[in-house]
Image 1 (cartoon, rainbow over the protein chains, first blue to last red):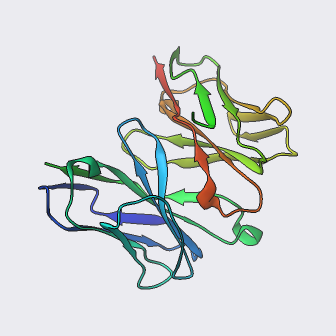
Image 2 (image 1 turned 60 degrees about the vertical axis):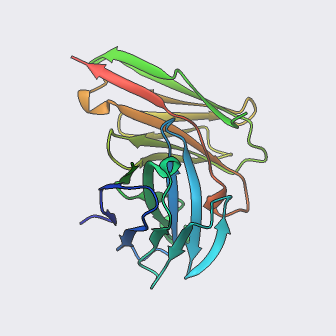
Length: 115
Length: 114
């Protein structure tokens, strides 16, 4: 069973559109994340959610908004897509370090291309 | 300047050979260092996690070492296999903070050829 699953895997859309990427984890973890990996392969954190509370939001445009309906889900909504938003977006999760250690589990990635 | 530098940027080795990947970091203070393997088109997968007090950690044919004094880590792969072809990413985190403060290296792209 996939621990962290995200959909869609590939998404091609036009500038100005609004799109969402869904993420679900079945590990019972408390914290979920969204990372962006650009063409230079740098992984940069975008959001971190712990028990449905946003605890960090790096300098990400407010066009990006995370939505967490419950502890197992953290969806990423992007409004008014721009060419520079083209990247791979990774969802990840981490449990309580006293129980499951500090390992972060990543999803398979969602390839977003804005044309 | 990135606080986690990896070298080499890319590496090609023959199947069965050993190799060592390097990671230098300037993140200070420092809590733990992780190595991830990222296959092409896939998400990163954790290989090892070492705290500042650990010198070495093994995971099968992967052995990570850490020298907290020189702020260097290495990932040694023995008897390489074609499936080892991937990017290997070094990740460092400071103490007392959530993992949202992880600092990622750019990765070393390893290609194992027959």
